[in-house]
Length: 307
Image 1 (tube, rainbow, N blue to C red):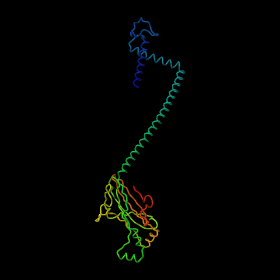
Image 2: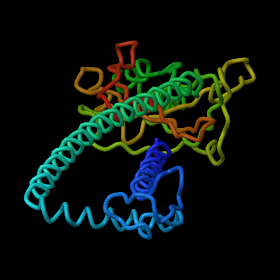
Image 3: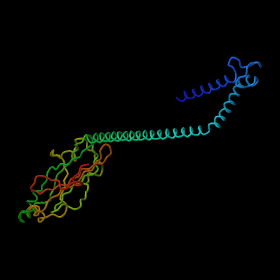
Image 4: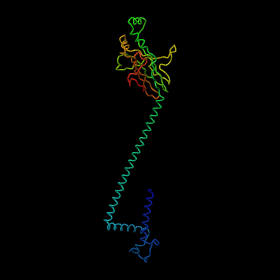
């Protein structure tokens, strides 16, 4: 587009030069004899000459004519200039408004593009998280057995029975057997396992996770579908962990549980990493009233939580 404008300007200038040369001398003869008729009041010496002389004379004549025109029509030219400035200002105002509208539209389009990009990024993250969630390790708790009912009944039996049990080596320690299994599709890198059993009329106000020893000196890898602890004993039974009752416990505590005033609380956690290096934990806090076969979750997060 710019090249066409330049070409038009060049053609206009050449046309003006040609018109000027034509007014200075006939196009059929650039050199005139002294007896040729004068044109436009010029003498023969002024009217005839070389092309470059005629071109120079044309420029001078245009300049003189322009000065004369400006002096003669000064007011009219000023009015036309004012109108031209007003038109230019109006055009500039319209162009500014149009550029503003274009800028607003581009801004809206950029915001829409950013929203689309953000939604695409969130969708990609959700897809990646879903893929990881379906493939990652999930370590879940299983309660295998407990001796709560038997031992509570032993504790609340007549004193002579308790004495006889003690003579036979009875300790009266309440225990729960448990294990963990990996329900994910990738290995779990276990870093900590803890489990504890306490009794009381109210849940403990503070929970302290103490890792079981001596198993967790090093990280242990549990494959997909694997269990912890893994393997069987000499009798072919699955191995398990044991959570023994903590703190002082005797006939009075057993009677409170037997009469429904007390409760046994089993709590703990397993902490592990997945194959992507993210840390996870399964926390549990369960209540048992001895006569119920179920270990009921007591409380919400963070006591009972899987991350």
